[in-house]
Length: 267
Length: 93
Image (cartoon, rainbow over all chains, first blue to last red):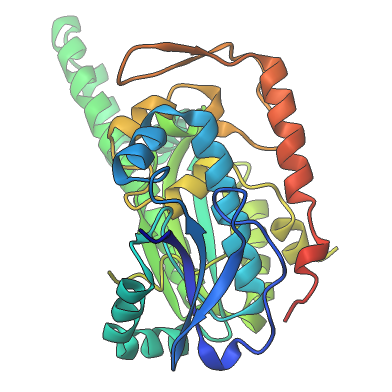
């Protein structure tokens, strides 16, 4: 029974002109190495199939935080270093193959798609932007400046006490709705502007406070693919927005360059 | 240091890495999220280490795993060391 293969990523074979440094792989023992095919080379390491069955890994991912943390950082660091040296299609955490044969088969089958993807990624970088906001502060602004809400407030003040209570509740809902609309408008506007200096921009799911552990709300999560020479301007623009909108409760957080997990994805 | 370098050199939080390398990311609620959410480990940033957390609750089995600050510090040192790595990867494009 042969060893399993842990796949980190795929690179164009014509870029594999120098050997990989001697680095330990996923299990801390076997080293990573290249598995070349005609057009595409896989960057892999061996794993003992007995120690890394699907059930074992799944169990560890869900129950062993320390293991997950260690291995996640390992995967990230490894792929990150590879991204600095090659045009790479990075694979997700724990993408395993039973043997060389099945890996080669998969690579061969996806030859054309991979070639297209390499062309798309070559010379470009993936950057992430998250926008956070102080809900309370923006809600205050919306409440004070929004004409519809101001009118409603005037209307309510003229009502008898009893009615006021219910009308105020309805106005609260209205304010919350306006708050969300305003936040979306703001973020969409920023997104469009940044797309102008990028090749592509995508919107990702935002995370709840239970995931971020922060008091600010994540209003926007996005990822961009842009040519390396444009990165300076992209970051400059974000810096500008930071300065412009910090006072009104907005925070911009850029991270990157990331291995192109988002823009290279296909199954 | 350029703006780019400053950002590039920033430590990445575990949660950002997981969102990107895990098949389903972290935004979708599931067992994985619940087992790391609600705990400061979620924001495990190599520099900003929140050491006030004393317990990590295992969602699935309800077993309690004790992770104290010392363990965090040891882990952080190990990660710092690994991240500061280098020489192996000296060949850059």
